[in-house]
Image (cartoon, rainbow, N blue to C red):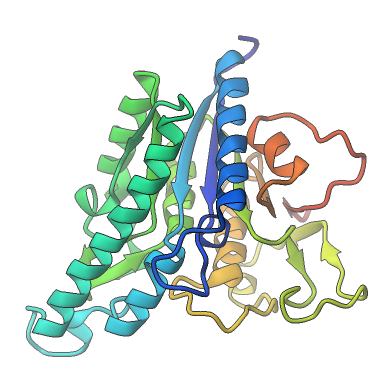
Length: 299
């Protein structure tokens, strides 16, 4: 090992590991295999260098359709003056948790079979939020303590977007993007955050809708020291259900990471790409021109 120990946080987006056009469908086997093979290689490279890996995965088709169907993002307290959920919410909350556990097990088991020593950390067991994203960083301390313990023991913690209880809403959906952001605030050793998704980065317009060559990839997003601009970024999303914000959510929380700590390298790139493997393993791609989006604080 040379230099201080570093932590890399990788967010495996729902679009990279599931078929977001379906319900409870994993991504095509080739896509999933290549994505997880890169995680395996990155883990080996990081371990050899004395560095550590934390994984966060999205919910994709195992969470977003269910959350939308049962209105779980806004929670049951918004639907009634009664603090207790009605039968529909009880059914929906139980159902989405079952779906999320199914996805988490699928990811965990595939990584374990690749000799990546993963241990799951279900957020519902470690946090009760306070109006979802308004939850203060200190409330994530219990979760962070478990992450640290697993890292110290040589494991790879795996967290995920989850349906959780909420003091204000009754329940809500806690996105993996929020979890990654909060971990960067609680772990000074975090060096890089990578969002792995099904596109190469941020485009002027959703590349799934506009395939023209004039629809350019934005290699850099320069972040202003202005919180309001986080809410006003104009990048379109597809029409598929994504209760945690889709690409807009990634942009919002990536910007927050940079504004909180500009030394953290924050990147969006595509599953299976040379850039994805290089960024996850703290290496540089062989190609001189990176096909990805990097966030930088504007000086």
